[in-house]
Image (tube, rainbow, N blue to C red; front, side, top):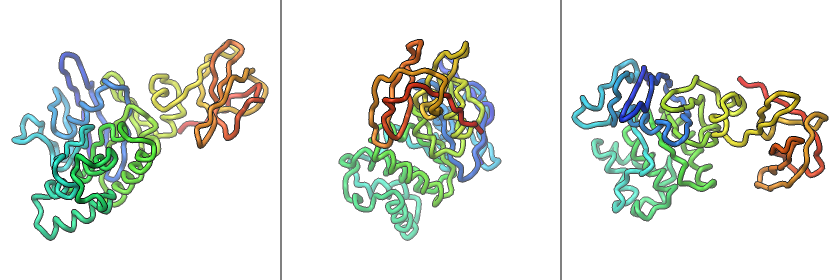
Length: 307
């Protein structure tokens, strides 16, 4: 188990403010926040690359040394995959992984190499130089290097930012397999809540260096009290109705008398339509559906229960 206690970090101004949380073995934690919120700084503290001003990090009950106390910064038991991938560009995919396995004996090294190549779908490109691999392949190779020596914790810093939708979907599956087959804890950082929603066992928001309360993915999406956090997960409708300010997601409605709408247009997104309306007060309302809603004239908000 990783336990973080009261981590604070300050450069010219405070970056992290009393950060505390726990993550058990085999869990996936999502950390969501806008650019500049302190997400990458927190990961670098956890990875042993950045010394906090205050606070402590414990792994399996043992306090980890601050990076300033280490001969070589970084922990063998906690590995980070940063946005630059940190690969040896002119060595092949296989050579990159072998470099990460250098401390193992030859038999064990070959066995681990074979498993990593299979687990992250790298076997077919084993002889390609890393510089010629695609973005998705480089991402998977970077993960293979990070987990080569079976760390307890894997930290992924914006792992989906340079990938198209097809590659993102594949990486989602690879991450879940990593958790299941390697039984490691994973922390995923993203500015886009959709990236962590389906993967995470629980989610935290980081705003201005402060950590939110722990939330379930369902609650993170449908609890709209904090507008800034809510928008990180997608569209939020905001309207005034009967003297109240209301917020709801595009799927939180039913066809009924209530809020009058004027249809504007529909956009097909493959899996669903987004339908654009205006209210009587000319507020924009966006609703999702399986078919265009050009005949819809009134709705009632049907809130989903959060947990």
